[in-house]
Amino acid sequence: MNRLNLVLVLLAVALASGCDDDTTDPVVLEDCPAAVAVVVGSGLNPTFDWQPQCQLFFINVEPADAGNDLWTVITRGENGISPTVAYGVVPVGATQITEPTSLQAGTLYKVVLARFTGPGDEDGEIIAIQEFTP
Image (cartoon, rainbow, N blue to C red):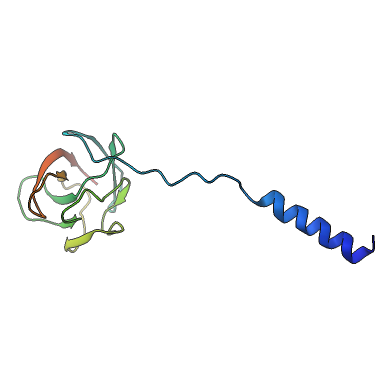
């Protein structure tokens, strides 16, 4: 075998060994149940995670003592938001209803999560409310 053929064979073996036979489909999450536990990350741009890992349709952040929305995202007509979500970053497939307002350190906020129930595109029920202070 000449040198070029040897190099080509070694290259083919290296490429083939780098291929993964794993054809596992992406994890498809179920719709959220009637209640979830929320974990809020630290900082002025916190992350929102929930257990069990499931899909919901609405996230809203507001001051803990007032009802004005600081950031709202929704997937109308379906539970399409999967964890983890960062404040101000619109999840794939979601629509931003309220643009993010800068959070202030030391201020008490709350995040509200809801699941879609139908029949209307924006009909849902609250499944978690968690207060946090960045």
